[in-house]
Image (cartoon, rainbow, N blue to C red; front, side, top):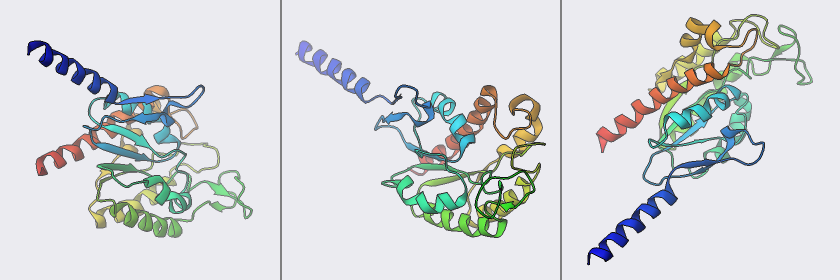
Length: 237
């Protein structure tokens, strides 16, 4: 009898280890796009965003190992126009516990009439702010249909002399987004304020992107916001 029980326990341990949450990358693949081997006992989180979120996804996975299966969309989220075109495929089965999402940096990139990137201030924003608002409302409406807990991550600062963008032009876009999130009761993971306070420590000079340390700091912010939503869900059960 003892032998049978011991065998069952060992098999249980093996089964658990086989199901353990892991992230498998292919050769030369960005680890942010690794295949997620889920632990079915853990909640499912989806990250939607551009290269800023691509940068902090690997660190976020390490921080939340054993707490959640961290998925992300299989591409750069780009501007809101790309989001509207792809949101259904990105959501897949829609069985998400938390969705942490952002659009903005690509919307305010300057383009010419042919859709080619230009110098900052030449041409117009890839997605003018009125269209950004319209698109973001559509995206929020679709995301709410998943019944997941939603977290908006606001757009990080555009520093001086950034390619194709003008310093500070993310602020009115963030204001539009803040209004939409308030109307829908969606909390904001405020990366913008944090980066403004620590820009020299975390962001590359004259670049919207972040150092490795900077991405790790953003991952900490995202993890905190996601944990808060997961705790709310635990209390409701």
